[in-house]
Amino acid sequence: MQFLGDWLTIFTSGCLVIMSPGPNFVLTLRNSLAHSKQAGIYTALGVTAGDLIHVICWLIGIGVIISKSILLFNLLKWLGAAYLIYLGIKSLQAKHQDNFVEEQTSSELKSLTAFKNGFLTCLLNPKVTLFLLALFTQIIRPDTPLALQIIYGLTIVGIEFTWLAFVATVVCVAAIKRRFLSISHWFERIMGAVLIFLALRLALAKAHD
Image 1: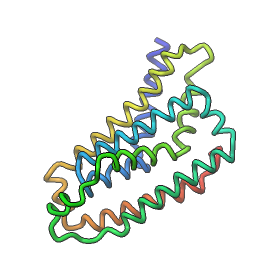
Image 2: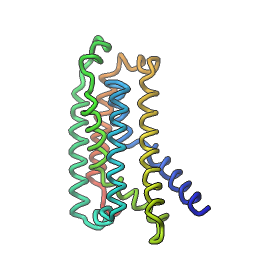
Image 3: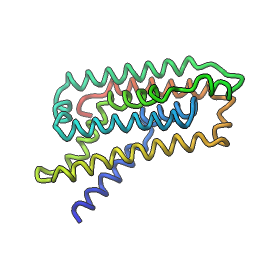
Image 4: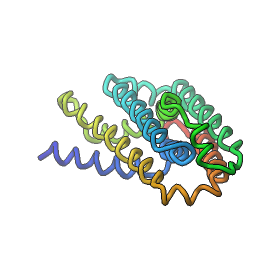
């Protein structure tokens, strides 16, 4: 019963945090609408891989080191912010397309590029490590078996992928996507501005917020 209670706590907290709009959500939404469902799914896979690295680092104790080191925290923070700003600037440069279908074919985002976008955006966000620390330190005790720790970590990873893959699938339904045809370039610019805003917020974050 203790395990079930702890797992439900992690599941509920994970859902609330992961489903809140953030860099991972915005990037997946942008790539799905601007390119394709496949691009969105691969972005979600990249984010999930980044989450997995964060979980592994936490399990071997690197998360604690990062949380205690202002230098390491700031290094990850600035790298993450710079990458988000880069993606945001690219989106701000989006131009109106007269033929959306042709543009979709000619500008299809490569799967590896979409995966890299999601992976780096998640991996370079130290807030993910701090969230895991804040959550897991309330649940995991010195005598908690490693197997249970892995289950808790994979729960967060699973929630992230399921949610982002769902977002990528829903927004790519033809009826929904058609509504964005005439404003697709403006949407990309808005998403770019949001990414830059999130990057600046990340850059200004304090190590122990």
